[in-house]
Picture (cartoon, rainbow, N blue to C red):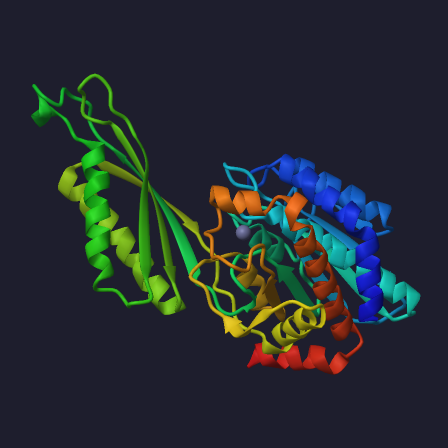
Length: 386
Ligand SMILES: [Zn+2]
């Protein structure tokens, strides 16, 4: 069956690369992926999937389902397609096409081999910001799914994901009092001063928090005009940690520090707690299948489960449904940061076609391994429970 998947995906290569190119050339930010979700749904409609959009409480989310027979397992493959301000510099156009490729290949296998089972391609928007998967999860969009699969392109040698960090975002706006900075500073309050102090105090506070905590503030906006004291300063703070306990402690600390800085500088503050993502957990049962299938399709892959310092919204899902993530490489020789211009160039489907087909095959083969082996699904579930 793995050979059949191989042949089928190679036949679909042009269509999948074309689909990925459309998304790549029309980047849309989180929650605005109207074009991408539309072309993906259209594509899956054309291959005989039953599609629902909007889905899970989100206009740009979708679900595409194919069921063969009755009572078989249900496997979910996720497709992401949100971009960044500099385009598809995280390669979500590749995630989308691979998710769809896996979906159509599984459908083909269920039909041709007359196997009972359901494959769902779930379009999960807003990974970069907002956590689309969490919203879909909260709205029951992942109910009755036995296992979930996701792919993300990377650089360096391909790998299966280990743990990633939990995250929390806080936006702070300081408001000062406008006055001439030179002749009447004593009548004003400088909002920028509060933002700068906040950066410093957060840096110092990190030394006295558990060592797995990272607090990263970004001064995103302040105003300078005509020699007046800045009235507004906005700071976005991202907090990450390996342990949920460390994260909770750091978040509480940050909130107290914002208050303290406001008191010291007399700048008023508004604090928006944006929540965050739960760190991914390892599911060895599903992860090992992904690895074995990467090897089966000739890809070099690292041993073990490789942790990373990033965060993403898959963790919220794979803490309740067994699932794993595979990272096929766009460029084996060198490690490049996601979100950079260089990564954007690497994610161009003109050269990333092999990653799209490999990803499609590996996820389809893994889905078929699970569908045809109920013991593996049970094992994955009991591993998660443990
Ligand atoms: Zn990404």
